[in-house]
Length: 347
Image 1 (cartoon, rainbow, N blue to C red):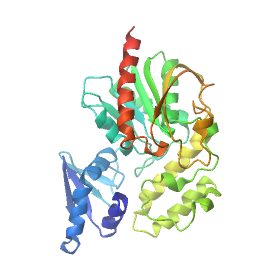
Image 2 (image 1 turned 135 degrees about the vertical axis):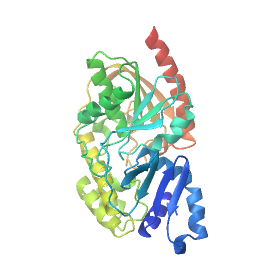
Image 3 (image 1 turned 120 degrees about the horizontal axis):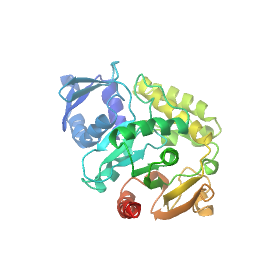
Image 4 (image 1 turned 90 degrees about the vertical axis):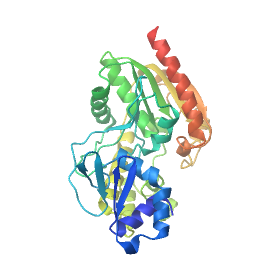
């Protein structure tokens, strides 16, 4: 049983799960406190704490007292004013890194990367709006860039900035860098983590492959899904997920955000970017692509939009770039590249 399936299981039984600092707390009936469940709680403790820390309202979270939060997986709770900013590693003396969410809208995937970059490197994620209850999702890359920059400037009012994003997140990071440039701000480092230009992405993605909260096997095949428009994929997957133990409202919000991100990507026309950009491309390409586009176009389509582009190759597939062992190589390359970029910016 994976983490998602475990959360589905305890949600269906009415468990309450919350954090008190670095401690994971839970409430359930004695009949449900089996040795197997307690073992799995210990196994997934770190991941659940990180999920609650990054996305405190994803399971309708409500503040209690003095840093204590609870995630009642069955009941509706109020939500605070939305902000895309996630403090993954807020401490440190270095220039902070701001990393935009991938297609899924979540930033949970960046925790290992932030850890490997070191305790003195501040690292902030930017999550999609619309995942948590009461938030209105954004539908354009340009709007995401503008709103995300407002949150970035709450932490760092002026440059030099370090921006990056994995997959879809690279598009938003590029637009953010472009907007900062037009405002006279310095972008010391722009990193695209295996981000393709929209024109090179296959016209019909398979939404199911990116749904991180989906832990069940769908009864419809990948081939059948591929033939459906992205909106119909979302509806079909949501209907099937409703038949499992996942809380439907959370799943619906995630699917909607991912569907809108897909549309935003297809409607986005990248600007001509005059600054320097580092592209970290996956050596084996994208698992879900029928054809290895990266083998045909090493810059993943960015040659025309970005004249000053530097290529770095990371082992493995696109889907596993921020997972071990590939993320260790990515982190080391990022460390060296960011350090050099900041030195160049001072000259």
